[in-house]
Amino acid sequence: MMSVEETKRPRASPLRLRWRRDLVFFSTAAVVLALDQISKHVIRATLERGEAFPESWPVRFVNVANTGAAFGILQEQNAFLVVTALIGVVAILIYYWYPPFEHAVMTVAVGMLLGGAVGNLSDRLRLGKVTDFIDFPHYPAFNVADSSIVVGVTVLVILFLVGRPGAAHHQQQ
Image 1 (cartoon, rainbow, N blue to C red):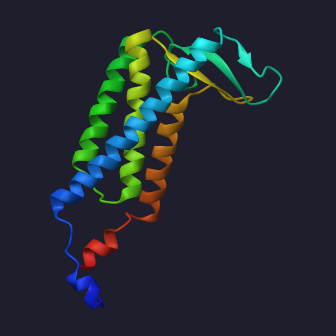
Image 2 (cartoon, rainbow, N blue to C red; image 1 turned 135 degrees about the horizontal axis):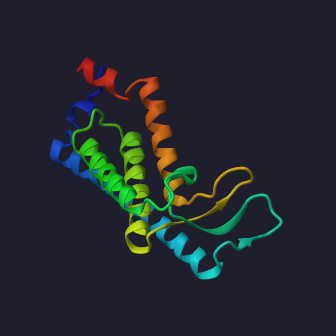
């Protein structure tokens, strides 16, 4: 049951709610893109290709030029990977514009996907390869964009497995 204060408080208009969601979505994507591009620039400027810092640590920074996709597959297939990334960016935007959700966590997760996809696409278009630099033992090097994509997809999968947040709330109204 709603209190007197809740009934007097004006509800946000659909346009205002959409504007807020757009701000969260595009801000998330912009932050991921900026962190990705800045970190890659710093690595390229401070480490020679193949150089690692600190050398003796298990987790380190290393300058790796990846001409392929995840886990080193599709090496030297830049045109295919650019087209695939463009299709991915368009799919993310379509998914965002026609969402099966209205939950802030999902908006952030999809924004992370967009920022990561644009970050790696930017490298492919400008450099013909993606700069990877976070190196764990027995795992291929990766970057901020890759991490953002993995976290975004993981959050979406978890939320879809648990159930769409807010779905029960919308059905009761």
